[in-house]
Length: 285
Image (cartoon, rainbow, N blue to C red; front, side):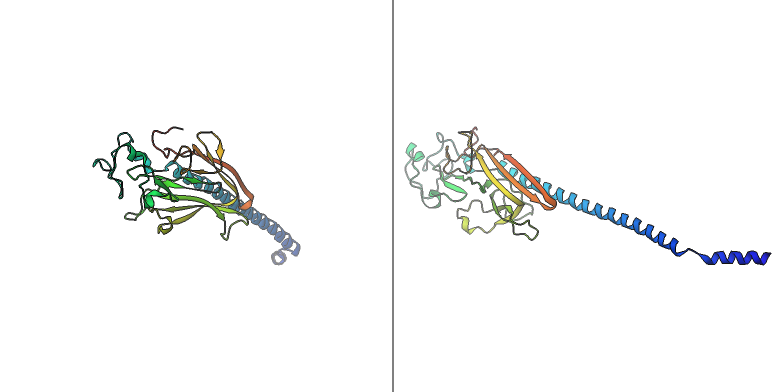
């Protein structure tokens, strides 16, 4: 009786799982693995989309904050120009010294007659106008078109101690074709070109130029300028020929359409206002 029981238990232990049971277990394991893989893949895809979306909108917001800072800090030496009624004449010996080549005359005629100006003081450059005062003070020049913008700003921050930089920079914003490898075909890029040679009148001999890409994937960009006299938006502005002369637009508006990876799209309008009018602290818009 005891021997029969031992044989029966040994036979059961040797049987194991049947082929059908193994196939069923493998099928169930396959479905579970596939579900886990699909969930993990979907998670990574969603993560990439969220990161791309965050980079896309954060990049636009950061770029516009840079533009806003530059425009707020537009600078011109005319802010320091002495009062015409109390300013010294070129040969009075008081106040600001006259520039080289100033005429020997004095009085009201010297205040208004600048025909004696020669060289760089007598002509306008890309960032400076001709001298507007007998002391040789020049107004910085603001130029804007529908696709570019240039002016002098006091918005620069020197990062490295001892570097040959100041808080003043020449700033140019302009559009160009986006040629980066990851760029979306047929899109533009807004770049920021700066130079620390602010007071150099020969713009072609600067050695401190640097270009920074700001916003890529642009389909359409438009710069507009609010005329403070008419309260109408215009497509271009040049402070050297504006009315009144050497004045800034009341506001600067940038409208653009941008596209990004994963079919991201942005349509925006940004409105900027210079903090100090170019023609002086007493000007009001």
